[in-house]
Length: 119
Image 1 (cartoon, helix red, strand yellow):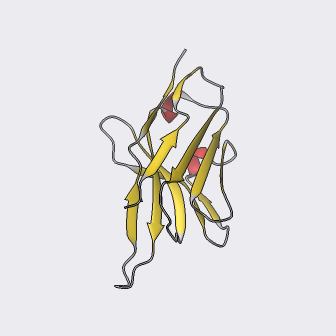
Image 2 (spheres, helix red, strand yellow):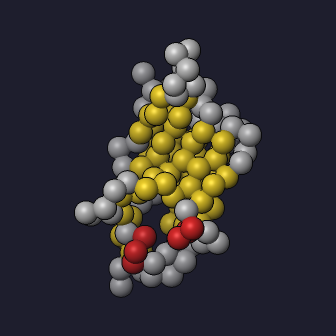
């Protein structure tokens, strides 16, 4: 059984920085890892992702402020968040997408870590 363990959330003032970390507890081959977030009353949305080949994708709202990275094995992923804004406040979830023999990929999720941006 694979578990994703997240860390790094917290309370920060506007303009501040946080670094989120996520690591898979078991041996897993991932095709993509990423971070999603969900604010109260809103749907979960993609923040950033990185493929096994190293291609990255960002939500327009975080481009230029956030940076995603991972280890070479693609079993740990990090999100450096700079220039944080109150609208970045949300629960952030780590995601690991793994290929399966059935063809459809399987998504693993972390438990979520709260990020609050407030003065």
